[in-house]
Length: 197
Image 1 (spheres, rainbow, N blue to C red):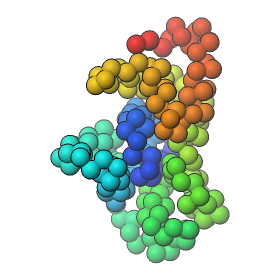
Image 2: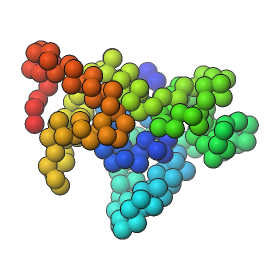
Image 3: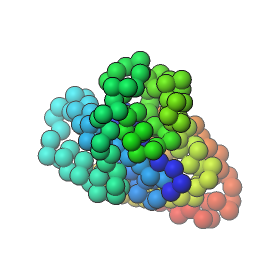
């Protein structure tokens, strides 16, 4: 738990990516943070894409996310928003939350909205979810693989194999991370240590 990362709304929208990022944080590899404002964006976006979803089900998902990652909610960041300069003013609250909780990383799929020159003043770096997971694989490969293994095992409607989940994660933005995992599968010792589904 040596560093803190703030999740932008767009990385919490795809269900498979959200599940993995929550699992990795819950396993204690780092401290994950977000705000109620970020969660509002997540579930408003999910409903726009799929308006037939039950809002109560989404509320349950929201509550489970908060329960899974203790102390995840950042508060008291609002006074910082006005002083932050970004290409899209609507993203300032994400940086404000990162400053407030002393995060070193913002995990986002919209890197253009968080230019390095705007973030370096606060010692914050924006990373795509793919780069973020690649970095985790460098120092906690077995833990990341185990999180994906457990995620696949938890999927029952429909049942999803480890490889099928890797395909899905690649489709939602983790292409390089998935390639790195698959490259390692030729390592006999790694295969012995990771349970197959």
